[in-house]
Image (cartoon, rainbow, N blue to C red; front, side):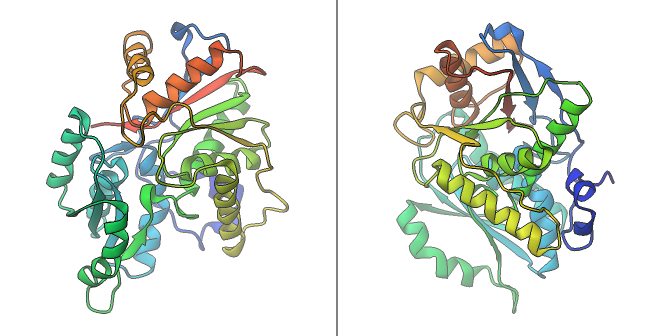
Length: 332
């Protein structure tokens, strides 16, 4: 099994922070000249990552979270998401392979063809699904969910939406370390911006921390696609710092490494009417990505992020060097 780059960067974490490889690394980078951007545009394509029933960046989080669940003696993972949750599906697919059960608390959002397909996949995954409809009802149901999924003396291992805990965030740290190695090898130029959708915050936070560890000056541009969580730069930097604190608590010598103010910028103008609500700009970006760049996007996360990238580039707001788009959607 290929060890994670984080263990190579901090070998003292090898024993204290277990890792379970679930995909083939590194994921590829390639230029996207066909989209006609002013900035030199590249993609780091996470869509192929994951050897199980779902792929993409959510699998990166599970590589750290599943070993921790086993270390704690948990028998069930309890987590939450929307009806079409990519995170919940990835958790269900990969946890089952390690002998863990998964229970999902789901809340409503607009349903399209993609969401209907995800629901069918979720029902086939073996996860226990609880349709709780709203965030308030989910919060009220939390004690019952914990009781319902306790096995003997083993409480369920709870993971927040998107797996965006300080530990889950290390999945995106690994992505940034990979990108740093690809820059060092001359595969891709050092980008000025690394663009990602922001649904629960873990990817943007982990990228900021990982980029800091590489020594690159790349900034994270997070396109916010969720209106149910606080996802401003202060909140994202706070999560990145909690991940750094976790690494130090497990024995890593990071010195004074921490993402600086300004290392994450967020954009909210491409959210539309809310989480999973379609927008015309996102639909146009999705069509362009398929026709001109060979990328399979979806309407909730990646299409909105690319729509923002294209508009900001056209307005001259992504100056300073190359731009890398992180493609996070991994259908199977």
